[in-house]
Image (cartoon, rainbow, N blue to C red; front, top):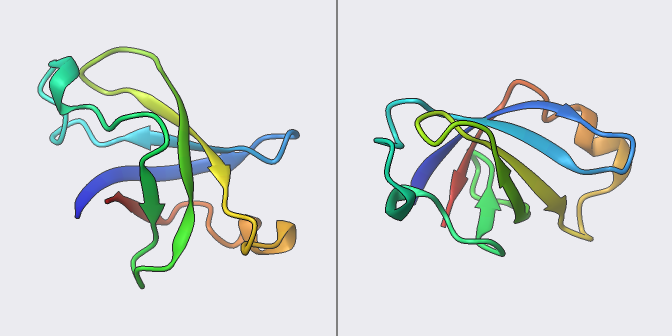
Length: 86
């Protein structure tokens, strides 16, 4: 498991926006997670999958499509939490 970053907010389309950790990504595209990689919270529960990557390569932003087991009100509690990619 590798740390992905911190959840910034939930978009109006119910997508999760994550700011990537600067130390994890050395400016190389090889270090970035693949689209559809599973994302987990600190208690190793699935949150969703990576659906997009944007921004600078050394500190990218990620959009996550929430897992169907995570209910919409539960998404707001995840803001400012660290998440991990499998």
